[in-house]
Length: 390
Image (cartoon, rainbow, N blue to C red; front, side):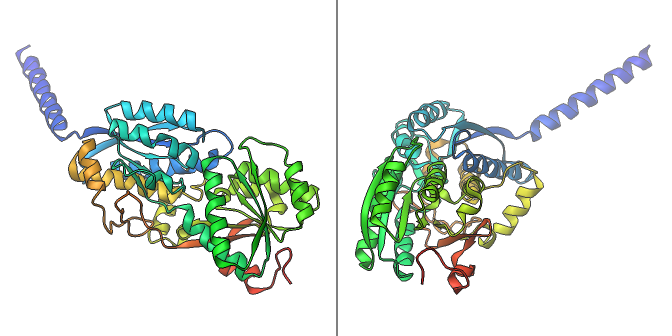
C-alpha cells in the first residue's frame, strides 16, 4: 500500500511539474480581426481575402519565435455600408480584439472610418481603393496597404489614349466607389486630351436592367465603355451590351479583376481591360512564397486579386503586436511609424494619412479565359485586335 501510494504520489508530483512547465511556456492568446464581403456578389474577393489573412495567422502561430498565440475573429460586411458599420462597431467595441484587417469594398470602408476612430481601433484596409478612406480625415487608426483608385485611373486613361480611341462612354455605380472612379478617370482623360467622354451614366449597385442606358450609349457609338463598379454589375452590363450589339471595348477598374468576372461571362469576357495597383501575385517580392503556403493550406477558393494585400495587412498587424504588445494605442503608434517595412507586396511606407504608396499599376486584358498582363498579351503585340482597333 505504501509502495503504491509512493508511486501515486510520485506520479502526481510529475504531473504537477509537467503542468507547471506547460503553463510557464504557454503563450498569451491575442485576438485580431478580419472584415470583408463573405456573402453577396463580390464574396469571392472577400473569401480570398479572409483565407489570406487566416494564412498569416496560421503561419505566425506555427512560428516558435512568436510571443503570442493569435485567434482571428471574422465578420461579413456584405459589401454594404450599413452592415459594415454594424460589424465594425461590434469588432471595435470588443476590447479583446487588438486590431483588424478590414474591407474590400470602398463603400463599406468609407462608412466605417469614424467608428474605428471613435473606438481607437487600429485597422489596415486590405482592398478598398477610394482615396477618401485615408485622405478625407487624418485618423491615426486608419491605414491601407493597397493603393488608391487615382493612379489606376491615370494609367487607364493613358492606355486608352495611347491605343488611339477617341470617344468614351462612362457607366459607374452611384456608390462612393463608382463616383470616385468616374471623377478620377474623367480628370485623367481630360488632362491627356486625346479622347473625350460622350456620355456619363450612373446606375444603382443592385440594378439588373441596363437597357435604357445602353440604348443611349449605342446611339453615341463610343469606341470604349468605361465601367466604374464591381463584378456583379459589370457582368450584367457586358452581357446586355452583347444583346444590343454594342461592339465597344469594355474597360473596367480593379473592381472586376476577379475570377468571378470571367466565370460569369465566359467567352464574352475576352478583350476586357482592367487595372489594379500592385504587381501580379506571382511577380510580387514574396508572391511565390505566398502562393506556395496558400496552396499548402488547401483552401477551397483562390486568394483572388487582393489576397496578397490581405496577407500583408494581417502580417503587419501581427508584427506590430509582437513588437509592442497587445495594446491598441501602442499598435497605432507603431503603425504610424512604418517606413520601408518588408512585406510580400514589397516595401511598405505609410504617409501621414496612413496610406501606403503603391507605384506599380498593372494593366490587364482578358485573353483566353484569364486576366493577362497587357504587355504580355497578344493584344499588345498586335496579334489580336480590340473592338475598334485598326
